[in-house]
Amino acid sequence: MNIAPDQQGSSPQSLLPDEHGLYFTYHFAADGTRARDATQARWTWRSYHLSDMRARREIATEEALPSPVRDAFLSVGHGCHVDLEENWLYGDLPDLRHDYSTEARGLGHFRFAFNDAMLVGGRKQPLESVDNIRRTIENGTRRFRSPAELIEAVMNQSLDGMAAELAALGDDLDGVEDRIVSDAWHNERQALIDARRHLVVVHRQMATLANLFRHLDHAHHDDLPDAICDMTARLSHRAQTLHHDGEQLQARARLLQDELMAKLTERSNQLLYILSVMTAVLLPMTIISGLFGMNVGGLPLVDTPMGFWLVSAVSLLIAAGVYLFVRRLGRGT
Image (tube, rainbow, N blue to C red; front, side):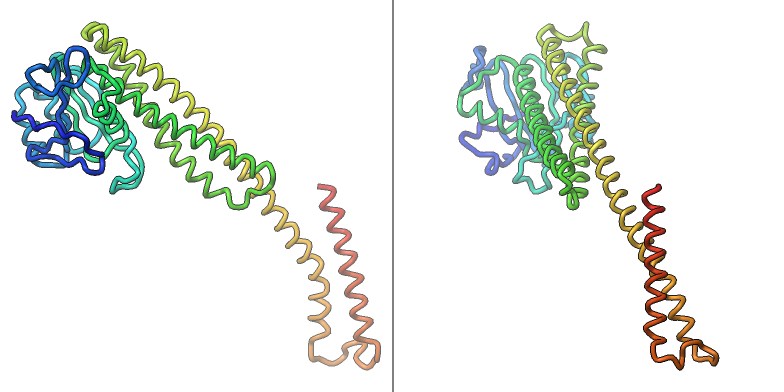
């Protein structure tokens, strides 16, 4: 396969795939520094644009990749997984998309496969973690002696991003809780729904990552090198910690939603009580006015000058009596 020249000094916004569908190719020396000459490289990182048909053809004809790895790269759907095949560790893991992505901000997918000499990566959208690691390589601020170190750095960046998302959601829940406690909760229902929806997405990915790394450690522990076993254990522990934090935030969001629904129910009951009192108070007056409004003979007080005021006074007295009776019933319950 032809290797594209390194793209130097490019920002994520300006990074475009070449004629092979490659975003970039980086070569690394034995000490982890970036090597300018491919002949001096101990290992190589290639990053493909998986929506580019040229990249898909290159991956499909890459003989170094085992067939299951190629199939995983070229699959249409996204399903998070980490597997081992002929000393190639490969998988599909979630990552946060950039704000400037053409799609709405959320989670994308990073596909990778590596052995001791090569790391092949692929993505369809600009991903924060991959571009953050790429910038550290461009700046020379980090060294990666093996593909496993780079994958661990990418996953730690991804977990950092998701931890920041959980922290932001925790701050949002703090604000919602403060407003509910201070009875300024009237506009908080939609904010709480949005927070819960976002929290469900992030928490689900944390659960997936924790299960994937735990499964990899259990299923292939004897086949993995010690360095990768240690990497898997570290990532699994951190993913499980974030998963636990997400569970706590979810439980807190459910409690806040229950409290908000209780306040809404209480307000609805108050409004229904007021409407019931008004209905009970106005009912006798409505009946009396209906009776005296009939155009039939024999109506009392028709020829009495004070008839209107007398009927009005009787109606008000009856309404006051009904009001006091209803208030007493309300206090009794």
